[in-house]
Length: 139
Image (tube, rainbow, N blue to C red; front, side, top):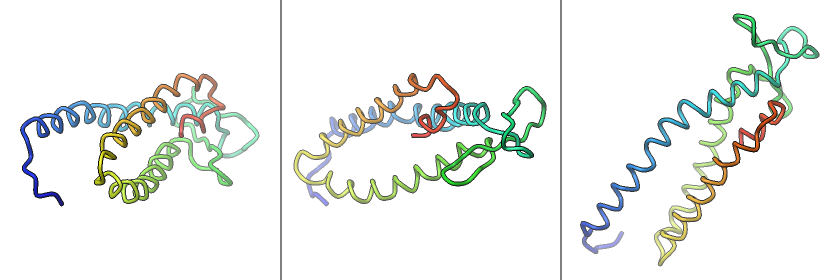
């Protein structure tokens, strides 16, 4: 921990960064991405009773399953599995990279690197045009 006093400019930059990030996290990660993942996994899924018949999302209270690794999961819960896996991965990334950011100029480099990587993954949603590529949207 540094004993240097926090400047107003650094505090303003922190507030500005948080203001830019929070709407994305709340709107996109909480609302849009789960809906997109659920829709694509349902369109690519199969009926619960017969895994050879494609899912018909036009009927009310449809029950479909989607392939998730070696298992089949309910297509409505596919997005929750993806989010749970991402949180698990974030545990290791935050612990591993958090300490590295405290040395030298790494904080700015890592902020920019992770920002660009996140932007590329979000832009990558454009590539997911076919519902059978639902697994790519989960990345």
